Length: 395
Image 1: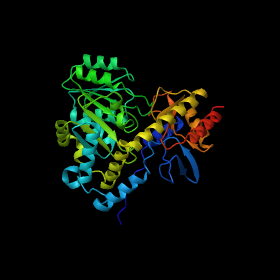
Image 2: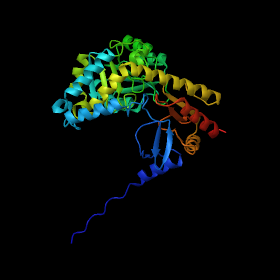
Image 3: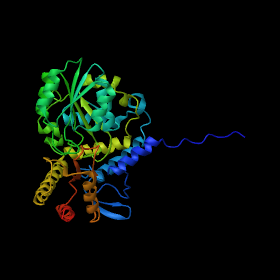
């Protein structure tokens, strides 16, 4: 009888790396939600008041989205079956792209499966080892990973320091240049100076790209997000990435750009070319979401979200909590050390409030925090419960 080779054990360095994360209060693990996205949700056998999701307008369970999902699935099925360039691009995808382009004032929109894939695809298609990419120090990991994947020279400037971005572009010679930034920074909640950065990019003949995952739908004229705040157009922001997993309440992402740039990305953006297209059912739900965001209900939800943000910031400042300079739904409470952030989060859980501790490497060492996120679906009474829980946790 042949002897069978035993399955190799996990390498020691893997176990050591995990152990180090645990020792440094940096170990991450998945929680299991027993209910859908809502201000009050079930984890295990307990109900919690949630302040850590990105469903900023509370649309994830909206009846019109559920109806759009069901109708689209009934007509087109659940799976798209192939990539956009084979036979996975159906009428729902095309209609969603056209409606997004019209809403945002861009010539074309291309759908991607996730925002991460969109950023990887765009940056790696447009730059290579002969090029320069300049990014904000606090940009999302997907923008940074896109630059690494491209092989281009990556230079990072201090957070929102447009003068530093200008100097880097001025001092570096490269075949092509790109300047990329978050619109709303996911961990600090503040907004990039897009008007200034756009001018700088134009001056140095650099492509300008904005990731507005956390701004889209939440503010700006007609809910168009960060570009709306600064009244910027396609000419000033030639590459705009947005996601559907936050304010839209669904999933997936898109890139808005010009016809010529979309033609280029269709040829060379590998995550677009080689990935199965978004579910038709999700595309239908997202169309319903876009209709809400563009309409009067969207205006009402944004007004409610603004009111909730103001209520929280006023109460938090009265408690003496250290906040960032954010006027968005992301309202971090800066704590400092990772173990303190964990203790703070656990103290809130004991009071029935769920707010996740954010620790390195997601944020810099010494910058651990509770990332409070607000939704239009939160009531002022629920925010008062959060503030009361915070007051007890810091006592």
